[in-house]
Structures are given as structure tokens and as C-alpha cells.
Length: 319
Ligand code: DGY
Image (cartoon, rainbow, N blue to C red; front, side):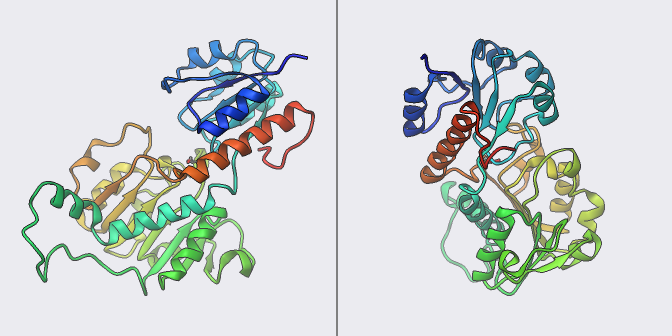
């Protein structure tokens, strides 16, 4: 019997591609070019499965054009906001993602954003590289401690929970805003809030860890920013769409938000050009899950899910 056909939209870690090549007639993207709707639709001709990434726009129009042979889409991500899930359901296409395996990596990156913003790491690095460092000085580039400060986590899923655990190691007092109140073993002692207006005034540091999508679009807007204490720090390793960039930029300029660490951007890889002009923002290129171990595990989990769906099973990572 011939192997099923799998379209792989972007380059994947070697071991993941090797497994895909042994189990499937795999169509790879060796040049790792950014995909277009036409490219995905053409590449999927006759395919049983597609393995895509958050950078691919799997919107309703793209899903509608996929051939009837496609039974499952695996995404190399935990986030699914780039995929029109109702459109997939309407066509009977299953979707599988990569939860759990990227939790620690993304939480570590969140801590990096918080620390880098609080301690002015981006600014300091730029100064050293520009050859402008004239030596140690008692008042040079003073940031702020995170230990003893209050961290508010918006979105207490797996990654938010891991951030809570790690932040406590830094001596932070953790609060969280979430739809549900979590049991102690998952909240790690963090204090629950069910409304943003009581939560935000407590956030010396605010970490966004909620999923993207219509429900959370521009959640951090001017009204909510005004509820943060003056001098707050904002970190976003979740989705750029959570932030109203114009409002955050105004707050970074006024000092209401002292600093921000951003790994994700609305419309990335494009980002609001004003971020480039601000010293008090650390900008990273969506590195949350970017470790060798994590990316390998993500690929293997996505393939496990695709294998299971094509084999007639219901995998745990079915969205
Ligand atoms: C995800 O998994 O959704 C991330 O954004 C990719 O690292």
C-alpha cells in the first residue's frame, strides 16, 4: 500500500523531517520559503494531511480551497489562531496541535522578557555594541528589581502556570486573571481574580499568556493600560493580537508603562514602526518555543497526531 501524502509547509528539525519522510510521501519546503495561499493549495493537491505553522494563514478561504483528500491539518504550534477551526470542522478536517511540549520553553522566554525589560538589557546591549560604553558608573542604566514585585498573569493555561511557578523562584508575588479559579497544585499559590479592573492595579509586571483570536483581540487597550500602576512592565510571549500597539506605544512614551518585552506582534513579521524608536522596549522575533529540544518535540507530537487521525484514532492533541 502506498504511503499517505503529507504537505509540510516549512522546514522542520532534521529528525522530524526524517520521520515524516519515512512514514509519508512527504512534500517538503527545503528553501523554507514563506508560504502563500496558492502555494499551500497547490502543494496539497492529492494530499492526505498538511503540517503547517503559525506563519501560514490557514483562513477560511484557504481551507475552502484545500482538496477533499485532506483529512487532517497538524500545526507546529500550540496556538491555533492562524487556522479557521469552524471552516475545518465544516469540511470534516481534523486539526492537531502541540500542547505541553513547549510550556517550559515559552515560560522561560516570558521570564527573559520580564527580566530584560526590567533591567534594560536591550538598551544596554545596544550601547555596548555601538561602542558607547564608557565604563561602570553608579547611576548608569538603572532598572528595577523584579523580586518582591507583583506579577499579574493574564491567561493561566499551561504556560501561565509555568510562568507563575518560575516567577515565584524570583520572589515575585503572583496574581492571575483567568476564566476559572484553578486548584492550588496548578496555580502554585497565585491569587485569583475574575475581573480585570481589580487585577490590573496590582500588576507591577503584567504577563500576557492568553490565546490569540477574536475574543482577546486588543485586550490590552488604553482603558486597561490606565488601570496598571504607573511604571508597570508588560511582557507578551503569547500573541501580538492581544495588544493595541498604539495604546502601548503611547504608554511607553509617557512612562505609564516603564518598559515592555515583546516576542510577538500583531501582523508579524511586520511590527508597528514606532516600537523601533523606543529604548524601553525589548523586541524578539517570536522565539518562545525556539529551543532545539522543544522544536523537535513539537514536530514529533504533530506527527503523532497526524498519524493517529489518519489511522482512525482520536489523539490527545486533537483540537
Ligand atoms: C505556538 O506554539 O503557538 C507558538 O507561538 C509557536 O512557538
